[in-house]
Length: 87
Image 1 (cartoon, rainbow, N blue to C red):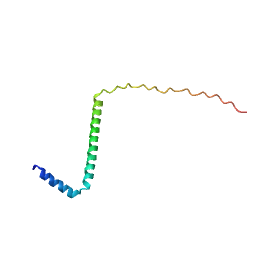
Image 2 (image 1 turned 60 degrees about the horizontal axis):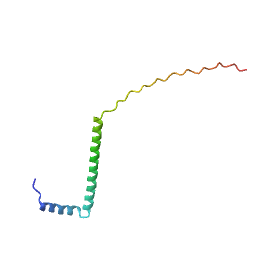
Image 3 (image 1 turned 90 degrees about the vertical axis):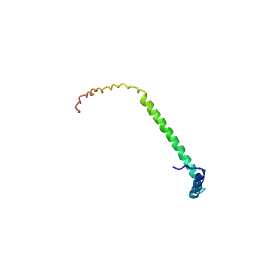
Image 4 (image 1 turned 30 degrees about the horizontal axis):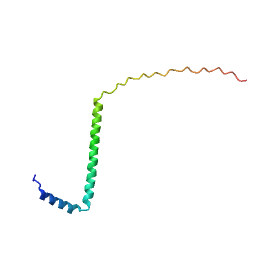
């Protein structure tokens, strides 16, 4: 790959200005900066998530004792009084 000197960079800069126009370059640079900022923040969040996941994997998990469930007790059926014949 050939070495790029200052002359080549100037030629590239002139070509970029001619292709994209001087008005659109600041807007393009601004959007590129926003994109890079978002990308950096996402990479930081991913690394934090990885650290948390590693800590959870390393830290001993508390052992939960099985809870005993009592079986429902059968309730005695209410006794019905014998019906008296109606007069």
